Length: 264
Ligand code: ARG
Image 1 (cartoon, rainbow, N blue to C red):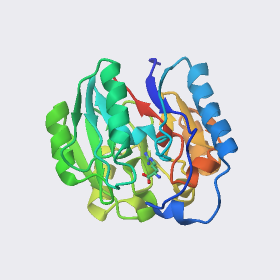
Image 2 (image 1 turned 180 degrees about the horizontal axis):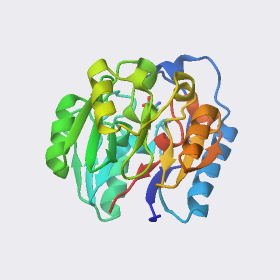
Image 3 (image 1 turned 45 degrees about the vertical axis):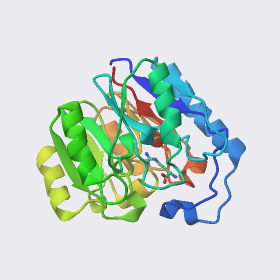
């Protein structure tokens, strides 16, 4: 198992004060203390697994900045910086850009709406690219050119699963788990052809953010409520590490949303 590098952002200023996805309109208030604890537990898991965790400083007026996955797609040391769909999140891009530049990376800012690893998944030598709610299809072509990788566009159709990383994750270098109902009929067909061995998740497990998981190829950090999926991945030989991200879920996020993988 290779060591991974992850970029995270502490939820110091995390809150739900606007609504840009269906999860954010539930009236349930966020327990910010609990959110901090849950996030720290996530980072401890990465530390304990021996992965390298980088931190970007949170900004006071950006309550969604904790969702670092949306800030960029990083592959072969190349950074395609996000261009956020919603004005509420657009200022995050500059903060992340500064971090990457300081860390020695060149950043290309996307010319199209593009939300980083929220809508890009690197697996099987391909870039899977989501569209429908956030990232524009033009950004898929841009990413294909920028990274020089075969890119497969997938269309999301259910607003609960507005980012690709809420409906699909890479189990390892070759296989994925996903919830077919989040995708258009032709995208379901494309996924079935590409990944005949995929683990198929139920709507219930997807609604528990079970597909918003972080796998290092062996260990899978996964929402503890996604019990069916936890069993399914265990049966296939992966080691689940269940965690509770109840507070982040109120903003429409889970473990993966809080984790941006840096592939140097
Ligand atoms: N409130 C954030 C938004 O709607 C949540 C982002 C979750 N991130 C993710 N990678 N799915 O933009």
